[in-house]
Amino acid sequence: MTTPSFVDRHITTWKSFRSLPVWVQVWVAGILVPVNAAAFWFMDTPAGWWAALAAALVLVSNYPVMLACEGMSRLMSLPHLIIWGPLQVFLLHRLITASPGNPEFGLILALLAVNGISLVFDAIDSWRWFAGERDVPGHA
Image 1 (cartoon, helix red, strand yellow):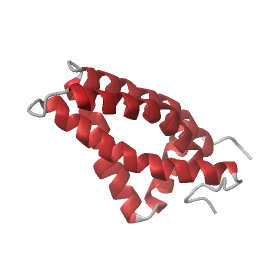
Image 2 (tube, helix red, strand yellow):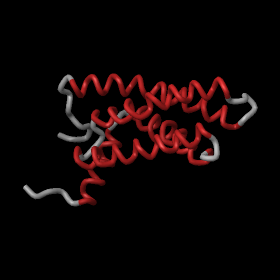
Image 3 (cartoon, one colour):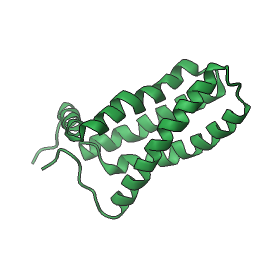
Image 4 (cartoon, one colour):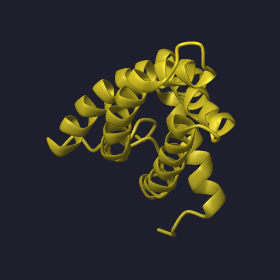
């Protein structure tokens, strides 16, 4: 058996993503990624800077996992817990000090809500991965 090419791994990863339930695809592509990507527009604020750094770290840590597993492995939840957990603590502190009229305040609320929900899913997926559920959606 030959090792899949770089392009083949991306195609398989895309197929894995598309095999997820529609609500998960909408959650990830329509809510989770856009809200975290919005941080890059707020990098002149403390919350925006730290959230953009966290988004970049999650991307850099999950990309190799996606390629190695050729899909959306539950293992991808671990970087979220490690990176977004501390970010949530920082954002809560920042929420207390930010002015409600400031655009940063809205970003903080969105990140706290979206990443907070995601962290619940991530905790469950991490638990399941450690319990031995290593299947990758879209694989036979």
